Structure formats: C-alpha cells, structure tokens
Image (cartoon, rainbow, N blue to C red; front, side, top):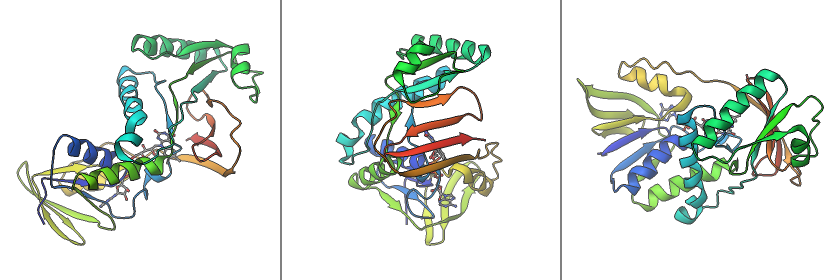
Length: 263
Ligand SMILES: Cc1cc2nc3c(=O)[nH]c(=O)nc-3n(C[C@H](O)[C@H](O)[C@H](O)COP(=O)(O)OP(=O)(O)OC[C@H]3O[C@@H](n4cnc5c(N)ncnc54)[C@H](O)[C@@H]3O)c2cc1C
C-alpha cells in the first residue's frame, strides 16, 4: 500500500489533521488506529470547550476551535451536540482572584468576552452552587460542551467522504526511514510506503517517537471522572474552582452529571 501521509492514531488530533489535510486537497491520506475509534483519551473526554485560558497561544487556539465546532455539524452531517452554556471559574483566595483577573485582561485583549463576576453575580448565574467561600468568578458565554465521540465520528466520516482512508484495528509496529526521509510505516496488517508520518498517538506518542529514535518529553497526565446516569440538565454553565487539582462539575453533552479532577 502507498500513502502520501500516514497519521498514527485515530483520536481527535489524528482525525482532525486528516480532515484538515483533506480539506486542503490532500489525497492518499491514511489514518492508522490500533483499536476502535474513541478507544483513547478522546473517548473519555468530558467534552468541555473553553476560551478561558491564561496563555495567548491557548486562547487563540481555542477561539479557532470554537469557530470550527460551530459549523462542524453542517460541514460533516454529524451532530456534535455543541452547546454554548458558558464556563464559570471560581476563586476562593486572593491569589486565585488576582490570577483570574490577569487572565480576564489577556482574554479580553484577544477578543474573548469573559467578565469578572462578584460573589452575588456568581450565585445568580448558578444558584445550585454553595458560594459561601467564593470571592469572585469569571464567566465567558462562548465556552461550552460537546459530545466528544461524535466529533471523532464527524472527522472520520468527512475524511472518508473526501476519499481518504481510516484504518481501525491496525497497529503501527515500526517506521522505516533513510536519514531524515520517511520511507514506510509497518503495521500488523502490512507495510505502507509514505514520505510523511504524523505522530498523533497521544499518550503513546513517545513509543512512536522511539521508532525513529526521537525521545519525546511529553507524558500523560491522569484525569479522574465520576459520571452519573443521564439527568435533566440543571447546571447552567460548567463550574470549576480555579487551580490545579480542583474538582469540576458539569452537565455534559449526554446530560450526565460529571465530577472530575485532574491529579
Ligand atoms: C477523563 C478525561 C476528561 C477529559 N476532559 C476533557 C475536556 O473536558 N476537554 C478537553 O478539551 N479535553 C479533555 N480531556 C483531554 C482530551 O480527551 C485529550 O487531550 C484528547 O482526547 C487527546 O486526543 P489525541 O488524539 O491526542 O489522543 P487519543 O484520543 O488518546 O488518540 C491516540 C490514539 O492513538 C492510538 N495508538 C496508540 N498507539 C498506536 C499504535 N502503535 N498504532 C496505531 N494507533 C495507536 C490509540 O489507540 C488512540 O486511539 C480529557 C481527558 C480525560 C482522560
């Protein structure tokens, strides 16, 4: 088999790369996924999408992502259940409040309409929250949630509609190269000749890097989530205290109540 580019990993990143290359007119694009679609982190994702970040790069990237998600359903025919209910960040200490204020200024400078909210405005925005120890909050109405499975399906469907290939249950086992030139990707279903390889294997990307002698410094960070049965949505915005290790509360796109924490 021959391909113009082989993308390793059929998660949201690999399929998004394949979708955008397809839109740019690339043909013979092949995505190789060792398992079923959504087998990796993309199938565990809470689906939170927000412009409220503290670095210019992340803010710009997420503004672009939200633009894309707004019309992805129309472009691909797959409903991604994108709901812009806003995100509410909460500060409980002076330090957290100062950090949120700095982020709001940066976000506003980058065209994001985040507002600083007083404690009583936080309570009005989300009456179910215990706001006793909350000092201030921030709210951006553009933020929201989507159904992550269907984003992956949307990209995969569009890639196939462009005549490109998504191979599932196919594991990449090696990469052949001559100097800096890629020659082929080896899989457990055969060899694919190619000049370009994209490593989109997420948490497993260092393994793929090692196949060509590249030592990638990235490492997976664990998230934990408790997900309930579907409920009638009662939380307006997605709500989270500011700071690492904080517990986040959301009615996600499937109407589950999701309580999650990054360790
Ligand atoms: C519990 C949880 C909640 C999260 N919540 C959010 C959220 O609310 N918002 C948000 O933006 N992000 C969230 N994330 C993070 C988000 O899910 C990830 O950043 C994103 O899904 C990463 O996508 P990916 O394509 O890089 O990786 P993955 O989806 O992990 O895709 C990598 C793929 O590579 C495949 N692969 C690995 N090795 C090989 C091989 N040798 N050959 C072929 N294929 C291979 C894997 O099977 C996998 O499918 C959350 C993550 C978790 C775990």
